Length: 361
Image 1 (tube, helix red, strand yellow):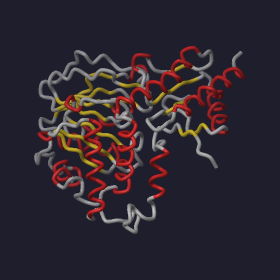
Image 2 (tube, one colour):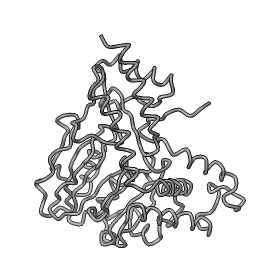
Image 3 (cartoon, helix red, strand yellow):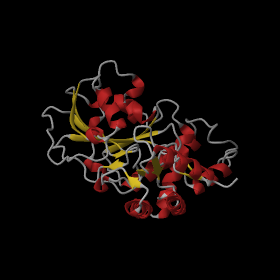
Image 4 (cartoon, one colour):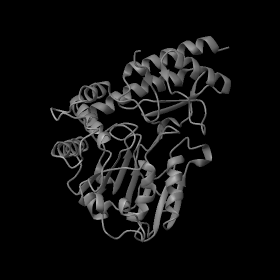
């Protein structure tokens, strides 16, 4: 069976080149006589894998020397607790709530201190990014928290909030490595790997060194202390070893393509194909305010639930998989991450045109 075009929001499509490389090395990684899946994380050969992965990531993002890179476990959702446990020194955090994951992080932070919701787009089903140029930032806030790209709703911060000198913490799970980023604008950013860089089970956190201290929330579990993982170079315990190995291969794939500037151009080209069709379609419409549209996640609807369901069913039959929208938005959603080829988006648009011709009155 040939491979389908996988539009899943995550776990998501991976580069075919990476999967083929991993398959070739599955039984014998570089003459070691074993799979990476089997080897000790304390071995020299694995130390090289994780060290190279970090070096390539630093190179891709031009990460400053005063930032630590941590490969962690527990999904991005675990960071909803780890962030306040490690950073909430004054027990105050300001949150901008632009989707379900931002909302969950906001709710989790309330366990550890005062979490202030200083802006939200919940009034319009998170279909836009609120104006964040002059927010009521709390004087004693330890940080300002955002989810930069909202996977479910298809919105993206095109301009980072004015935090008025406070550290910015960002969940970048679904836009990580999709374009160049100025790391120095953040105090901490983290991403679940399963959307744009690897298999489920790995979280990558990039944290400015001065935020990594022993002064954590009382009762913070050892495994949630950033300093423990930073001091142990992400090898305090058995890491998600095979997942990190795949991430490392994706980093090399991105470098071979020419880096994140090239990747951004490719992503803009793919997204334009889909958005341009949606903007002139008589049947389909996007659900997001134009200026806030994500390059990674594109929700759209016909306005008819039965027709939406038929679209998803018929798309699946021709190898366009995982197009059903999240239950909170309905309709359809195409996630077109880095590894989605342009041909996949072209196939989707062609199918949408045919579907529209059949079902337009």
